[in-house]
Structures are given as C-alpha cells and as structure tokens.
Length: 204
Image (cartoon, rainbow, N blue to C red):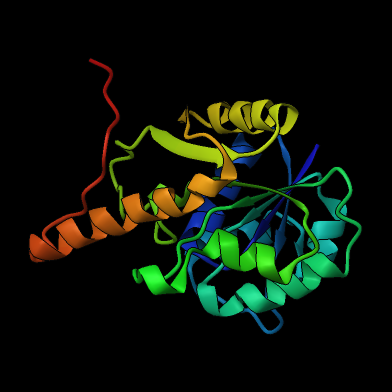
C-alpha cells in the first residue's frame, strides 16, 4: 500500500514520518515551486523520499491524506479530478474558517471533485502539529465517513501510528469535527495563547 500526503504543512511531515517509521511506502505531493527551510523537509529530501506534484502523488497512492493549507485546496481538487480515483481513499485532515456560513473544508472539496471516496481524520491535530502538541500527549483522533470497508482500513492506519481512532459516524459529521477544532482554538485564544488546548473523550 502506498500513501500520498499532500501539502507542505507541519502535519504533512509529522504524519509522513510516522508512517515511514512504521515501514509504509509514502510519497509527498507538493505545490509547484514549494521550498522550505524547515529541517523536517530537508531530512526527507536527504532520505530520497518521493517529492512529487499533487497529481503524480495521487496517481501513485492507494490512500491520500490532504494536509495542505486552505489556499492550496483548489489546486489539490483540480489534481484529484485529473486522476482515476477508483478504489482510492481520500482523507481530509484540514479545517475551514471558523464561520458557519462558509461550511467546512470537506464539503468544499466534495463540491469541486468527482465524488471520490472521502473520510475525515486527524483534523483535530491542526496543520501546525506537532507544534500544537510538543509533548505528544494527544493520542486520539476522530474520524468519519461512509462505508464499512474503507472505515476499517482508515481505522487500522490511524492505529498503526499510535493514535486511538474514535469513530464519529457518517461523513455528514465532518463539519462537527471541524467545530471541535475551532472550539479548542477559541479556548486557547481566551487563555491569551498560553499553551494549546485539546479535548479527550471519556466514557462514563
């Protein structure tokens, strides 16, 4: 199985390195002209990991994680539409703007693409992860989507890199998952930026 991770964010390198560390075949999809001085990207290049354009990365992959900045999403959607997405699983790890009128990123991506298989996961970490969790205390992520087979596949991939996979139901709940992210960001803002805040699910 080959994983493609799209985007030049911290989350992209963090997930990529975690999956590489577990022996997975990982390619990275980056926008034209992407350049970064961050050590994480330099290390990946030194290790000769595939750095491709969005379309080439998607074509090589069985599972595609979208971890890009919002301004790059139109280019990602365009690349998705140029590829045969049959049997490919797409996982949206991003968050839209904190404005109910704007909808959520998953809905936005779906409107611009030709109905590939979509799930939502890892968005609670944020694109700046692991900066938002320097001690790696966050050990769970919520995921949602439609279909049983791909749900089990994604659950196994989440658990492979040490996260607890919390099933949040159908894809229509993607907007609720984004709301969880925005709520924790608002709490951090109220606390005057002193640290980052995360939620932990408890069963009582």
